[in-house]
Image (cartoon, rainbow, N blue to C red):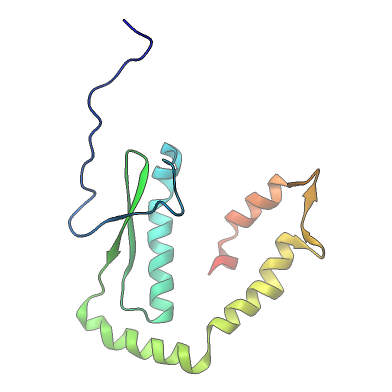
Length: 142
């Protein structure tokens, strides 16, 4: 027996019905099993909230993992929800609601994770606790 053992041929099952695209930009290499298990639900929920907030006529992105590679599928919006989404998009545009989010980022979130001179650094590396707080504080990412 050689040093290389195989568990059989690699399978590439289709993630689900419809069109799926690989996300090689954000994930050019396979993700860890931990990431594949913890990422899909918060990502789906957050992206759906984002689409609803801005009045987009997509329901969000569904994620799937095939051999560690990330694939996305656009979720549909129910036809009866279109008028609500169009009204929301008009409201967002009229009141420029993204500006309030940008202001919250600049005045509240960013200063919490950046010092007055940029990222909080120690020996030219990001302080781990700062990075962890940044990822866990979901209020600032809405």
